[in-house]
Length: 355
Ligand SMILES: *[C@@H]1O[C@H](CO)[C@@H](O)[C@H](O)[C@H]1NC(C)=O
Ligand SMILES: *[C@@H]1O[C@H](CO)[C@@H](O)[C@H](O)[C@H]1NC(C)=O
Ligand SMILES: *[C@@H]1O[C@H](CO)[C@@H](O)[C@H](O)[C@H]1NC(C)=O
Image: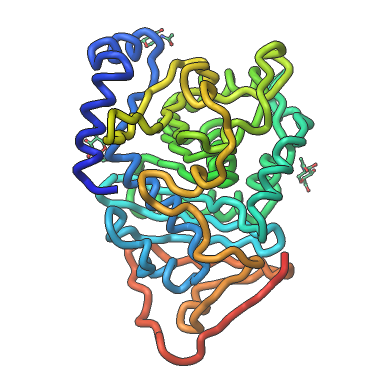
């Protein structure tokens, strides 16, 4: 996607999805979060980079996806939960004046299987402290009951001690978007973080209407980007006849879709209403595409190749790490300290696990 197309697109967004003036009014009335296209194109690059399995490149921010709009990012902690095949990082983006936390999506042999399973996820866990708020336990525990949560909290604390009270931006794609949401809620409710900002890409539904309502009030600064026919935001299903009983997205959705005008195709970015389930957004089309799920804003959101949960690491960087008894792994360093020069040639360490 070239820059030009996006410029045209910004114009069309205003033109088509109601006039810009009206959009502002709506925002004022419902206090909806403002969607910032520039920020979205930056954050999607973080959500893409967290898929990288070469931990040396990721930790030192030298991977091919670590260039571009995220240049200069300082990773403070990289957390790899081998048991559950999860990966996340926390770092400081000085240009955004923020701590950025990013979660990787699922890394399974078959994304098809993962998507099919999404149909059957139950609302089987009451979110602690929120009466009537039900969520799916798998998404909840992936963040809360793994090495991910303590790793994130420790890194955020460390970054704040060093840099002062930075903003916090949480992002993730797919399953990583679900984890990002739970993380933002946790930071807000349990750890006194203020104005946590969230932007997710192609995330599934994670809870019921009561949960969405709590979430919307507690983490209002949230944008949930969906795209074309991406199937994942349609799952687990929403049944409009039983709005209180089924899964329900929280606001605010921004739906990206193609608009054909003759031989030209434009991408429209539609800012949706404050309900979380705007019938004129993603829900107005059939969710039937995995292809649409794997690329947002022209950026790939998947591993370089699907394979078992695997990490690749240079011994030079391994000394920044600690491993627990179960093989879970955290790379950590003090803010603003340079990582020693890596030995990039020889001795590529490799740890393989079939989680
Ligand atoms: C929106 O924000 C204004 C000012 O901060 C506040 O007075 C009002 O109650 C808010 N409205 C809603 C619907 O939250
Ligand atoms: C959108 O985000 C970019 C990047 O953080 C920032 O520089 C810009 O000021 C923001 N625009 C608005 C209108 O807030
Ligand atoms: C998470 O772990 C705690 C402590 O091990 C346990 O008490 C709790 O039931 C677990 N929660 C879920 C939803 O599995």
